[in-house]
Image: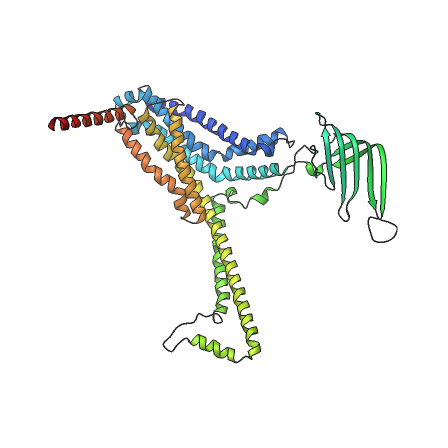
Amino acid sequence: MKKIHLLILKAFIQPFFVTFFIVMFVLLMLFLFKYIDDLIGKGFEWYVILELMMYASATNVAMALPLSILLSSIMTFGSLGENYELVAIKSAGVSLSRAMYPMIIVVTLLSISAFIFSDYMLPVANLKYYSLLYDARQQKSTNLLPENIFSSNFPGYTIRVKKKDPDGQRLYGIIIYEKNPSSGNNSVIFAKEGSMYRTPDDSYLVLKLKNGIRYEETNGDKGYNPRQRLTRMRFKETEQKFDLSNLKFKRTSEAEFKSAYQMMNLKQLKHERETMEFRLDSGLATEFRTLSAYAKYFSVPHQSKTGPKTYKLASSLLNTFKPTERLSALSAALGEARALQETVSSKIDLRKGASNNIRRTMVEYQRKFTLSAACLVLFLIGAPLGAIIRKGGLGLPVVVSVAFFLIYHIISTIGEKSAKDGHVPPVIGMWVAIVVLTPLGLFLTYKAATDSAIFDVDVYKKFFLRLVQKKTKDNEQTVLAS
């Protein structure tokens, strides 16, 4: 390999890793900002948060990898152009396409790796991520007894604490309702103050209550009224123990999330699609046979030369009924027609839902390939763009790369939504961004190979100055001629 190729590879690899980890960090911070309320204050162990962040980072690769390739390629060739190294390479007889040759190989390998990742590793990461995130969001807060709020965190009890000390252990103005499923709230405790602590095995929460009173309604000796006897008991000090087993972090079985399309690879998506299409076709055949049986009863009248025979047949059929029976016959026929209409409407809704699921499987199927294609297309845009603007670092390249990536992301998002809604075929919706940006990349490559200055501000300044001077000269000639 030539030294020029080694120089370009070294100039590309470092910015790629730096930008990749920066983008991953930014996306991870966005994840934390989005779910901060669902994670803080619930008593998670540190490794649970770390595991969730690791899975979230894996799901962000689909967005971070194309953006980092675009940004690093702009920075690489922009830095080479800014330091006149690109000019020296061209003066040595090496064209831009030959200079891009090693980077094309590296980006192609990255694209292949991205495809393997999206087909084998990403479904597993999605399964781990969404199942863990669901359990984390369902977890109750460790603030079991907030101030001035009736808390139902403990099954069978409703507790309100009027005030708490800053340490959270000392309580004031305590009310405890004990709920009986059959007779309702038949026991209540009032206490002026108290304290709470957990048992050493963290299985129970103990409330030590002081200076309080307990009211309890129980069944009487006779009768069926469950509230015939009221017992009142004052106490100086007592304890109430509450089970914490239902508040511990519990994991849901991952098998309940495997039916989602994000958790499937290409083989599973293809099998799922074929299964749904087979069910849809089988259901359509069954529905056709069912509705065909009603066709002779609900035929549409046809106008012929001899007149509407169907109406005459219906009229003659009604004449066979007694006048008092005609209304009942018409009502029964109308009821059957409405039942058939509801049946057809429900079948249509089921077909729409099945068709929507088929489109979603096709969208996820195409997504496995679009990630690799996006890496290649964005590199095809970034490398010549960096050679044209001739600016390195994290200044102008960041602005330009973010602008182009937003264009790609907006087009792909619109295409994906249109594909899921059924407005366009899934293949077109998922590949529209690639199809739109590929000609732009080829155009920029051509301009960079021909040393075009489409992003040089001085060129546009000189162009507008020539226009102004020409217009001024034409005005002067017009004045002289008049």
